[in-house]
Amino acid sequence: AVTTTGLNQPNLAFRSGALTAGALYRFALTVTGGPQPAFGAVMVQMNRAPWGGGLSISPTSGFALVTAFELRASGWTDDVDDLPLRYGFEFARDLVTRVVTLADLQFLPALGVTLAEGESGFAFVRVLDAYGAETLVRTPLVVGPPPVLSCD
Image 1 (cartoon, rainbow, N blue to C red):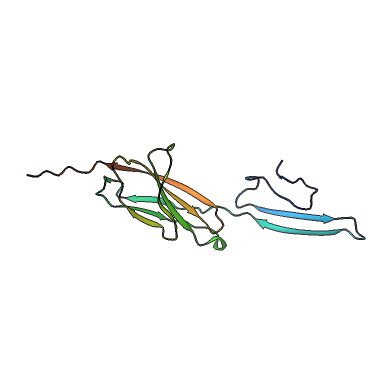
Image 2 (cartoon, rainbow, N blue to C red):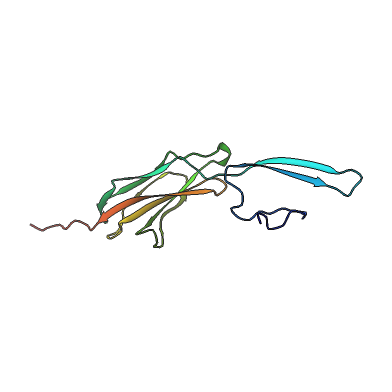
């Protein structure tokens, strides 16, 4: 079933994921039982997540506790009514491990960060619109051990 309420109730609730993001739906209501039936209809466009962007990292590899990485989310857009966009940056050593938050949601689409040793893995950007629809993108990142300094 697409709804959680059925079709003959005084309210209508849809199951999560039942409606397609970005699709246009027409909802119609007919009321009977009075002297005249009443009819109404409304068109509703579903929200869709931000699209069209990516995540770049500069440099793509570096050294722990030394290299300043810049993570930049660029090219993201959404419907005008869904703005502004917010960006959250995260890191995970693999695609199964728990994600570590590098920056909570912010309006700035970039982050400078230095990472600890052994943190090669994936950087993520989570892009959310004003209604909470989100897109998640990842990019590999290589962080080697810090360089050894000699005392010669």
